[in-house]
Image 1 (spheres, rainbow, N blue to C red):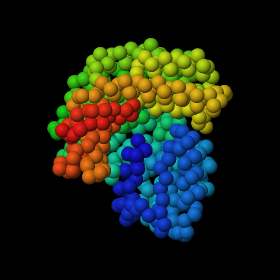
Image 2 (image 1 turned 90 degrees about the vertical axis):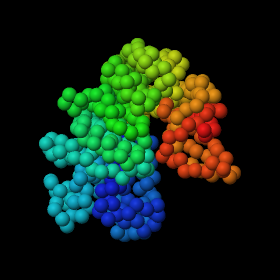
Image 3 (image 1 turned 120 degrees about the vertical axis):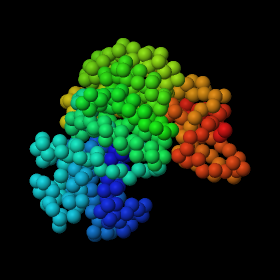
Image 4 (image 1 turned 90 degrees about the horizontal axis):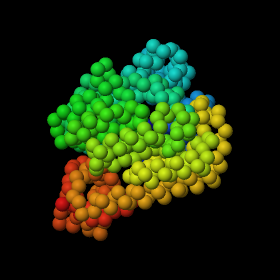
Length: 435
């Protein structure tokens, strides 16, 4: 979602006359798009501050935007010229050029405008509805992010998203379909539907399964992917829609967060491990070739070694293709920040290594099943090595793949579908020969 937001920021700034540059010296504007979800991301912002303070351009303007919790907002307020809500993006030109019409509530004068400030519910809803209508400057010409909603109503005790993104607001289905139709007309091959919880998408009588079907019915040869999903909302209707829609790829990220029911309850995750495994069983019954990834937190406050073992056993049983494993760090403002962070950093690291080891084994086992098979791939980039073309891309199951051809078949395939025969694999990718 942050990458998608950055694409919208880029075009707004271009319309204002700014030009993107890779040169750090002599720049006029520097924008940091951050996320307060993890402390490591916050720490990287401090690194950026140290770097841009070394610049000698007195006219340099600096902007901080993104998902920013109030505690971080206060820390960064004196380090940036502007702290702007991403949801106020339509008003950025007025804020950055205050000679024109002023932004409501004097935000331009204060050089400070952050959601949920000003505390006006009607105006905040207007911001929510407006910002996703801004046209993005896509980072390439074949794969596009299409946000279908923003915000979250779940209030997991470890997560800041409901506080920084606000409540769930879905875009109109017609607007999403129209944006996707235009992308397909311009030869885009991969559409990522984005939301903090895409499963809970709702626009009048159009829920997420129905939206998938509407997009699937658009003429053209393209793939549909989506993220992120919440287990509590992954219905039989959605599973059936994934089966029926041939353009929906065989990949699903389904965050479990913990393999222990007591910890899930402390996290305010309203499902049990038994229910989660039941969903996995249904999906694999209907879509046998599906690749599954998950998100998990180790060292959540109060997590005992036995409770962690339940997570490790879940990893062994489900046999994920990929997992995003985070070591718990308290986020100010969340309910879990009031809990005692009583799992040591060393123990968190140990648990992280155990899950990473299980994942490495199951991912390799899953990838070995591809050897000898021919798969469809979308090529994302290519390089020349030892007079041979090397192509990198993704399969329908979101496996990273590297393939080679001789220089006699030199051709530009970036952004195109092609067939690759798999010859080898590692835990994190496949290797093959371009057909």
